Length: 352
Ligand SMILES: *Cc1c(COP(=O)(O)O)cnc(C)c1O
Image (tube, rainbow, N blue to C red; front, side, top):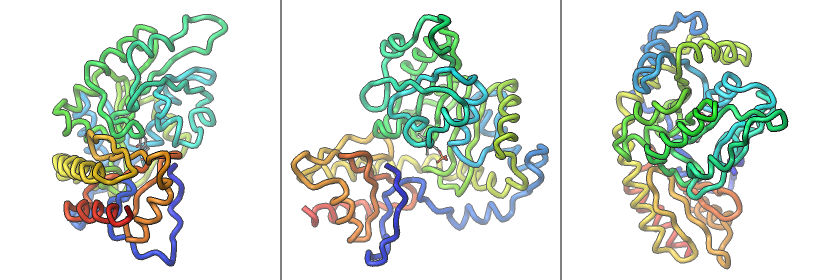
């Protein structure tokens, strides 16, 4: 999963890139906004564009404070470092990004263990959470943090219903745990469900948004929480080298994305549905119905391997990703048009 893309000199250039929404390129208009940004020394609190972005995201989430960071991974890890102590246990879905895609950082950096909870489509039930909560004792690892991913990436870009989020957060709080939302694709959940970012964020002590996924900025994520939590988080930002200088250049791209690239996520969702409908007609694939911009297809046990599908598409100039041993993932984003969705369906049909 997430293997580096090794350039193949014999393959044609990539003309349709469905590998990930991380492959989005900043538009000319976004670049122009970045060029004109007012900047200052971020770590001294003197970058007006970073400050404006942090205020904007704090307001969006109904939190007191926010901090700008280079990546979503750093948001997750700083939240864990801030809210947990070494030896603690964090509870998250077993497919969570903090378990599957952060290089073991919760253990390596924060000294915590993450317990993966089971459940379909990247989500666990309140009952499964109750089951996983251990009675406090001198023997058990203190359970101090619950993490939920909105949308759930490996779950299929699925959206946690608001009622379930409220329920798991209140179970966690009653058990004395803090709550953290990995909001890498939170705005996809917002536009698809009609629930506000603020409503999704309320049950969580910390929440962050990635600007480098479907929002299309080249760099940046913002972590929000109470003033006290963000003050403590600043210590970790400084310690791990996440304090920045004239970062307003990047924050300007993020502000541009909030203004221009949120509503349009509905186009990506429509494209994902169109793609899934087309692919469901192709033999050898079991396609999951997408809720947002991620389309997953399970390859039939007796058919082609996911690598073989991906290679045949790559030979036609189409880049997709292989997830685990049996799944393909195709991700729609602002760099993919309706025509390219139809071309991709045709390319799959040509392989078959
Ligand atoms: C991409 C992603 C992250 C990490 O964000 P980066 O900006 O790539 O570091 C964390 N969680 C989820 C669910 C993601 O999809």
